[in-house]
Image (tube, rainbow, N blue to C red; front, side, top):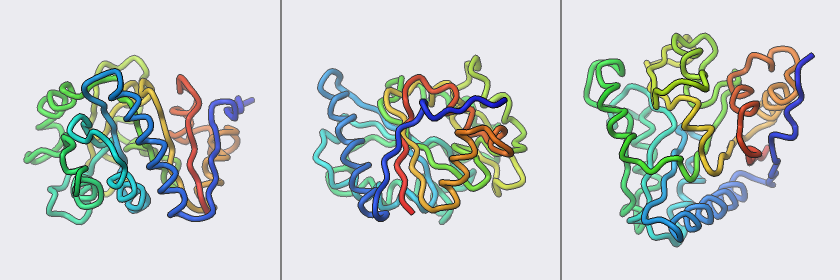
Length: 239
């Protein structure tokens, strides 16, 4: 019998996407301010896709000591920033403008033919970020993937290994499109605050299956994150 993970999450439900974006931006900014009150730098890892655009735009409007904020990505498609599918381009166009442009951005993509060729350079870049991350904001697909932990991924088991010392790994999967680079599970779990931002009824149903562990939910990669989270994952959802 699968273990129900309801005690591992805390739900925050909003009337519409903009209300969610504003509330999530406020909460994340509070986390970053708290970190900056005790340290010179704060770190955040963000997810890509269409869902977080409004959140990033709202976060850019928050009053923060932006020069002290270091930003990276949870995962990235192996495409240059000139591509419309680039998560780095998404961050630059939606977050890193105005005062927020003073934040230091550490992208995952490198000018190399594939992620395997650049993994050493990627890990060196991640090593300069203060860890544990103060904030990690995850997304989730309708197949239960989060980060680039895709079902059927060629390095899924290694990426989800809680004992791995790798900070990032390549990932190829049928549903992934391009090759990907993704943070592994340990740096995600170690985050001081872990958020999951999802929108739509279908994703709410996928999450419910992952939490209950019933049916396909038992194998969803997001369940591995929820099951091993060190504190309650903050779920921000709207229909």
